[in-house]
Image (cartoon, rainbow, N blue to C red; front, side):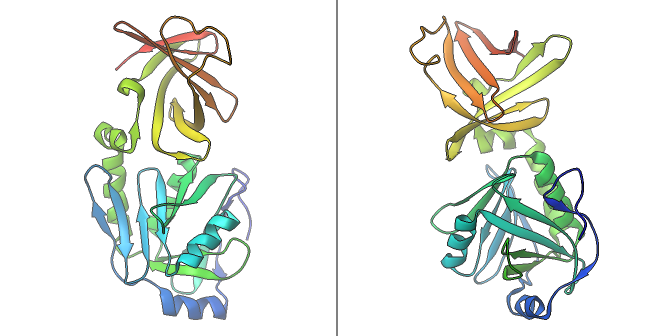
Length: 268
């Protein structure tokens, strides 16, 4: 299969037959139930069978395979191949999940949670899940399937999920932002900055910062760069994985953020 130049982890749409071994596994493990959508504090679109569940959340995917050993294998390999099937036998594209583009970890003692680093990558996956007939979640390095899910009804469920996640109330349910504040400002290039503290940290990354719609992982630092005396009003520093630094301040009724050479004032 050819690979898109835009990202090395998305395989370009092309038609490829699945091997007989994979097809036999698909016949044995494909989830035949329809997709459903659940609203509320943590909206999700999901499909569930007697021994497998695939759940799509606002910012991540949770997959509970048939056996716990499969969850362990995915977490240890830090990889998963999401293969989109036009029908029961034809693969039309794939997304290779790995440490370069996502965080994979076992949560709630069993499911594997995939948190994407880029909302664009997650959007690509959702688009393909909504457009195709079935999805094969397989090993990153072998043609061996952990489970295959029917995508009947996924389009409507994903549409509802996206609508719910776009609302401010849904965003607040997934993350806890310092004071719920959004900051605006900048120089020639204006920015809208939304820092959030994660309810569940992703390893050392316990925060995310969204700048003009692009989200990056960050870690919190409550001391002011070692032993330096913090300036008045300093609350927390968010250190981005791209080496960016966001300093959050609060003094009286004033809330602001410093990023680069600019100060960003509260704008919500």
